Image 1 (spheres, helix red, strand yellow):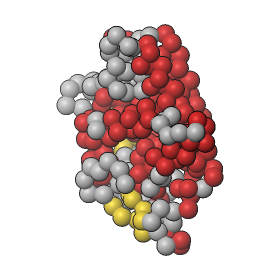
Image 2 (cartoon, rainbow, N blue to C red):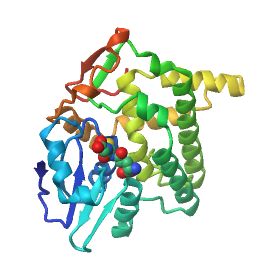
Image 3 (cartoon, rainbow, N blue to C red):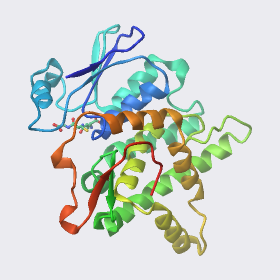
Image 4 (cartoon, helix red, strand yellow):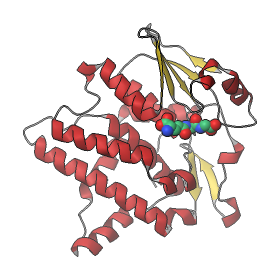
Length: 276
Ligand SMILES: N[C@@H](CCC(=O)N[C@@H](CS)C(=O)NCC(=O)O)C(=O)O
């Protein structure tokens, strides 16, 4: 296992898989980073043939959950698994940090969005596997398949709905450009799809424009979602985490070069890069 101890003493230890490949891990790791909560990190690996996978299967955590992320809190004496449950747990442990929006309407919508991401978007999850540092050229067919377009349109709808309500509720101030104003749990949950868009060159701007024209006869309906995407790519903490993912030691052959047989070459990023 790769252990990264927190510089500040903390009761929390987060068990994750490879930063570059494990989107579920990065959802929660990014919450700790964005909300500046010190955490020790223990990293195993997803590669079935790798030594850190065997170590994971033999670890005490594997008896608690066969999937990561898992969080151990030594102060309370509890171990929690399932990323949505972890997000709720961290929010409860640090109520003053407001991991969920403070406004009741925004909080309700934020919970719906995080739950929908948690349970859905299976096409993107299975066909556009998370691989932060990879970029395919040209875009593989999956990036423009009808199933992909349906899920991207749904994401654009959700992000637009969130930003529209946020602008209305926070009209007098407090909107920092994240989905619900200040950074909150759904921003972390929807960050991995943005990385998948980049890896597989999903042309979300064209999908947004086509959807808008089809639905309203003109472009622009999803502009708030597109603005949020730009805002996320400019987030300094996420950029820093991106660099950690690029530099993560594991390279898992089975997750790389997925679309080689259709002539797509997988390049690797060496530094932060926002989009196509
Ligand atoms: N619903 C779980 C899913 C977590 C999940 O599927 N994690 C992957 C890593 S990204 C995993 O642990 N897979 C087990 C394996 O690959 O053996 C959660 O929200 O935490």
